[in-house]
Image (tube, rainbow, N blue to C red; front, side, top):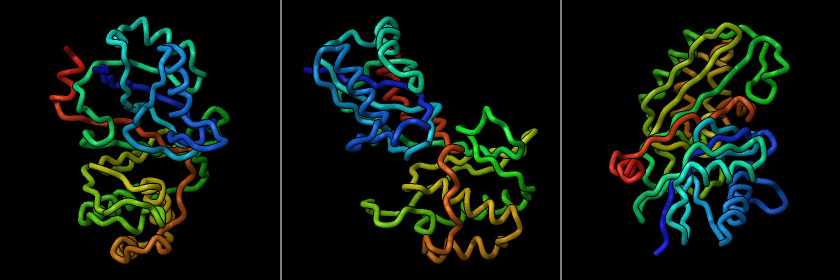
Length: 254
């Protein structure tokens, strides 16, 4: 029987066309599968905890795969595999898990950060949205509080997706002012395609005084993507954390 592994990793999404394998485009999933298959000398498929779009980053991501080999959780193997990968993709740890453990379906929450840089910075072009405008962070946090009153976020979902429901439970949402910009953090049990970027784009309209809190609430209630703001640029978005039940990680620590 094959051994199942969880793999913890991070990537700069600038030069990837998202996580998922795509024809005629370089993806994180494809890059990782090729490296694993080459080093292990067997065909290996990787299942990610979710999808990130082109240009979106992950400072923490989890995937799982199966192998005929039962010793791939050794740090030496992680080091060797990293040497096969490009500079935009790094592996932190490979851990044995139970045969039913699933990187996507077992995840109980996901956390994203979105970075807006209000000072031109050549070193942050790939990792933030440059916007030289004053934002009312207080009003944007009032808008955050509105999110907790709802579960249906159709207005912030990409159209024509194949999901069965647009319901999500948001656990945390907050904007924080930094020295030269603002950072948005949001945590939920699940996210819809393009949801965080749509929320950010709409909240920026609140922060610029172009959308009132009452109007922000009406956008959510309308369940109409056309009424929400334009999606924020991909480069400012980071998947930052994924949580799992304790029993999954008990296997990982054995």
